Length: 75
Image (cartoon, rainbow, N blue to C red; front, side):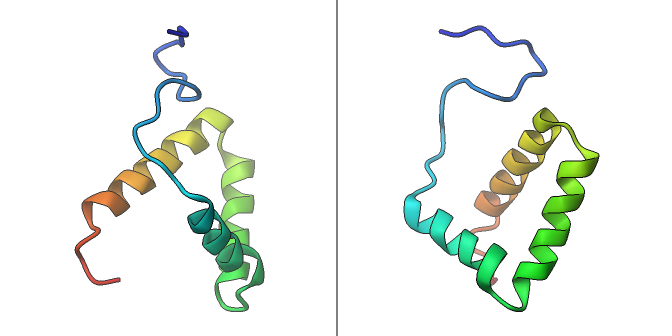
């Protein structure tokens, strides 16, 4: 197994799968949807400016976990 420092979130074993269709849908929302694309792009730009790569990974993982926990709630 590859060794990583305790605060390094990049690498390691996978526990969730994101399929190509989900990435394509996310890309549509982020780049082509006239309502959501500007908001998503502004947020991504801010995150990429304000946070390190490791911090952005933490945010991504926690968002996925929160979505997983609330999957049964209405959108």
